[in-house]
Length: 248
Image (cartoon, rainbow, N blue to C red; front, side):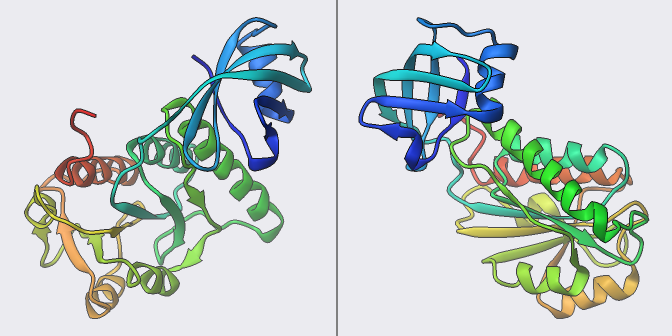
């Protein structure tokens, strides 16, 4: 069944109003009509089954016929700090990490990042990244849309990572422990940060700064993975070890 996100002002008693892009999606893409139903998730993580009474490309109205609590969010708040990558690979990381359960995705500027966003285009790019997270969260049944912020310098990324209960940095070279030896089944942490480098990885200086800041260097094995592959694989491993990918 189709799902949309609604704000506090979109539900009045048992009446639901959907406007803008989500209304167009329901009407034009899914071709829903009066009498059809969809699910609306509100800001309190309650999911409402709504029967449509009016449907147009700009406005969909309906009546709530059933409501219940939804619990699809991970217990551990995971922040992915991903070095900006070119082409559609950044979008891929955002989409898949959102599906896996990331609570926040922070684009990061490092020494070897080859993509340099001009200020005039940066806001547009960030808006697109946030829309990708929104669509991924809606499609995979989440109740929270991850925040995708603007790109931050590496040192600022380290400060942000240091605010989490545990902070890891993927390292291709130097002393690093296997990720599955650091994130083990039964580990209890409320928040986790994971730094993923660009094509070419982190520089030696960046890795040293990260270790000095208290981050743990971890590895995904002897094979060198593309940065988008590393981000998705590491995120999945963390959630699996934290018990977030088993039976509901």
